[in-house]
Image 1 (cartoon, rainbow, N blue to C red):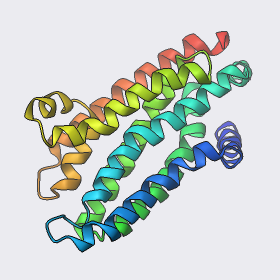
Image 2: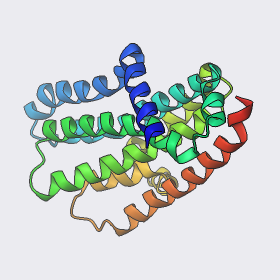
Image 3: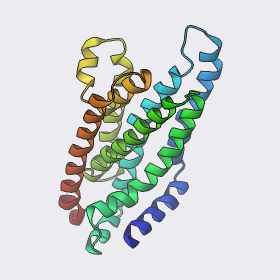
Image 4: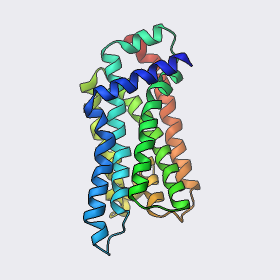
Length: 231
């Protein structure tokens, strides 16, 4: 527990020292707010929460993935991960400590998205549920990318294309059935489906999201054990 708390505290301090990471949690809801107020609410043909769901999907697929991967790659580059492993820090402790702060910050951002989208009743519960679940998945993906990267530059080179794929595929899928079929394996697509139609069954989307989480967790543990002492 002490190890998790120490890593969580370290991550919180590092985030506020790094404006590039901090801005990820601000820029997407800010854009959603501006576009909702200036475009959606002045045009009856556009749903009030369209830009909220769009920016939320991009935040999950792009912002969180690149932020988490960069932070973990930095730990590897600075040899911090090596020292943590020598000190006996387990994969789950490192992941909970590092990812826990991102999950906390991502949850706050999700609440802001929900308030901008004017969701009510069961809608806000479903929205926050899928957003928080998606946040956890994105953190895991970013952690895997960071763990297999030699440094921050390598993490960016790998993370940005993956982030673009996950962030923008749901939007393209809305206009192309072929892309939609391919995108169904991604958690961001399932989240996009749910937040755009709260009446659908959650069984399939949740199963896909949980499958993503399971695969990413296994990959992270393997990468942590393999890369840790070499980092």
